[in-house]
Length: 557
Image (cartoon, rainbow, N blue to C red; front, side):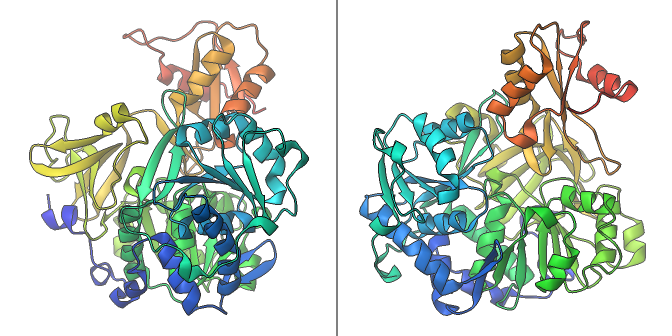
């Protein structure tokens, strides 16, 4: 094993990237809030955000976020530990809410308004969020969440002229736009690297989402590394495609804004056919999950030279097929293409690999592209079942260490102890990813799949056990779930559920899933299995269920 690859990462120049270490100077701030504050004052009149057809400058965005921040601080929530939920769906109010919370030294907890209210209320309870920010468009969703939140919450409605009628009899305190204080940004607390930055909830194998608290000391090293690597600047125009509950969105927002660049919230209706949008706005940086590019390719919306103005194409969240990367490289011939890897527990992405341009190097690549080497200051090693570092080309569980690795799961010491471990040969805490990998001298880290039944749907982490738990409760019978169908690129397109003998109709079972799971985790169909398949251990034989689907696919509902 090459110690340099495992420990030190690969410098931009060594990977054929321009040496842009000077670009990281703007990212020396200790917190996300300070990063934006510094950049907004420096680039006041420049465009910061394009959303819903309007362009917002840095000073306008700062002016919208500041009253939110001051209201949170005035309520005693500016100590670096308070949690502030932001409810919405990638609208202007969501961006200003995240910035307001960050400027106030609050930990922001993004809530996707398209997710089931009972799931959002569960997150509010588990996070013990002391505040909730919602825009006028999502007042009804806020009501549903707050009705199931037992503890009192400060509710900020920055773009609402008055408190909704239903708010009077609740336990919560409401502030509307006119109630928010007007004070300069310089009077806000500066914050420090130990402050919490954001709290995200991912799919949990027990049937309930689990939280990961990312501190500023985790996320700022990541931003400094990628700023040095990709040299974003005020002239750049960057895509924003990820839901704000997805940690890759943090890269979108704060790498862009830290550099004084402009962020473009790509509308949902052009997500899979973005050529005209990218051309019209002269976008320079693209970041998405591979599934987005795969859908574009399937729709013939990823053709040679479609995106000549892009200088950077980044992919993360799923395995990146070689065929897909080559199609993207042909569509964006002037772009550097990189494959990033990293779970939420290790802050956005911890390794990176660049697609070479030389034909002989392309020919030698595996069908699923490598994930490369760690970013500077981080470490990534495959570890064998006996707990020793795997040798070159030896398979092991990929374990991660470094400043980007978080402290563990939110108020779950049991789960933390299972996944965040120490090895006798190193004094750091290592995160056990559950991913299989090996180190190839020619390519660095190579991803080999999962050790468990976690899958990625459009880049979102889904524990199939969570889906099974919901189905089991709804059916009161044997239940299982598998990723199906798989595209020609090997990426999962959805989930199919299986139940044993059960009187409840399929529609009722699917509705139970919609009430408990985010949309991407809801099965597209239910299949009935009277003779439940078991393996030699007496457990559900998922391979036989997959064989059933391959032999006789069911129709989606």
